[in-house]
Structures are given as structure tokens and as C-alpha cells.
Amino acid sequence: MEGNLFSWMAWTPPVAIFFTAVVLMLVGMTVWELRSPAVERRGFLPIPTTRGDRLFIGLLAAAYVNLIWAGVTDLDQTIGAAVGFVVLLVVMRWG
Image (cartoon, rainbow, N blue to C red; front, side, top):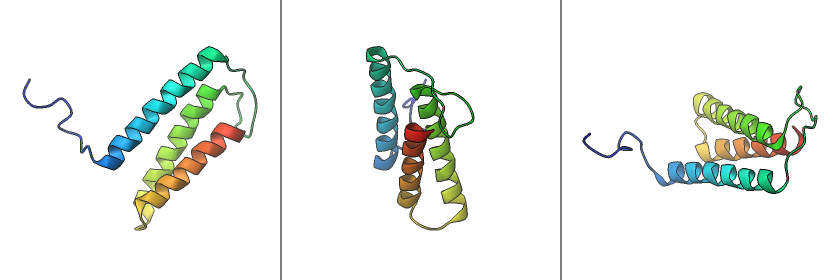
């Protein structure tokens, strides 16, 4: 195999920060789950969810917010990322 395994990826600082943040969230959630097992609860989401469920749903929602932002506006993507982060926090807290 020639070349770097990740040579297809544009490893810019924002991309590296994003993936680092996702990995840190997953590690943090794993430690939290091991120390204090989650209990299902109901929020505004139409299903009972655990912390891990809400993290997954929140990350998906944030990704869609970013894709929509990039597709329908010419404004700075940093604003879209901030909106996506707020969506993630809302889903984690009240979802």
C-alpha cells in the first residue's frame, strides 16, 4: 500500500479540531457511563433515551444543521457550526 492511510482527507485545523472534539465526547461519555450508568428518560424527543442516545441524535442533528447551513447560505460556516453545537446541547439537556 503506497502513501499515507489518511492522504485522501483534507486535515485542516478545523477538521482536526472537530474529530478531536467528537473523540473526546465519546471518551467522556464512556467514562461517565461507567461511573454512573444512565437511566432512560423522556424529554421532547418522542422516545425514551439515555445519555448515549441523546449524544448520537444530537451529533446527527448538528451534522444536518451544518450541511443545511453550507447548502443554503453563503455565511461563514463557523456560525453554522455554532448553531449545530447549540442544537447538540439542547438535545443533550432536554431531548
